[in-house]
Amino acid sequence: MAYLTDSELRELRFKRLGKNVKISDKASIYNADQMEIGDFSRIDDFCILSGRISIGKFCHITPMCLVAGGYPGILMDDFCTLAYGVKIFAQSDDYSGETMVSSLISKKFKKEILESVHLKRQTIVGAGSIVLPGVTLEEGCSVGAMTLVNKSTEPWGVYIGSPARRIKERKKDLLELEKEFLAEVNNDPL
Image 1 (tube, one colour):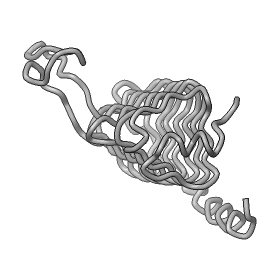
Image 2 (cartoon, rainbow, N blue to C red; image 1 turned 90 degrees about the vertical axis):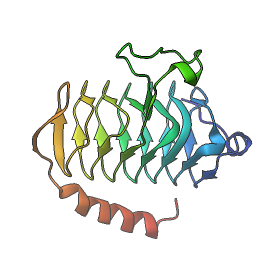
Image 3 (cartoon, rainbow, N blue to C red; image 1 turned 120 degrees about the horizontal axis):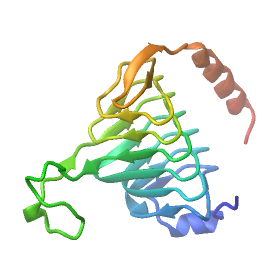
């Protein structure tokens, strides 16, 4: 995997770009002027990011993810991970048949769902999962592979299924590891 150089990243004119950010040269970035990416975050091959997006520190968007912030936006706090093929949408068409659907149709004939999405600290979304508009994944949530998240979650839960349901508590041991990690990072100039 080849990453964009510092000068190539600057040419994209992000709203804010942290230090040591890695973005694959095979990723597609649209509306970079509306995006903020925190220190040490990484975006891998064949990802598509568009619209208003804010990514915290130490976030990883693995290959083939779609992060469609649109106008409402998507916010990812620090230490979030999207596994292979995750799709997150902050806007969607209305599929009821009451209105037309298609990005080629003027808004006059459509009823779009426009709601921001928020992934709080230490969340991970498993491979092939989908997160729909208006969802907040509370701190520490783990979403299993192939899960459809259509409602907001409670903190520190493990969610699976279609639609997502909480199956158990997620351990918080990683919070101590986070403290150790940050202490190490702060003492070691990366």
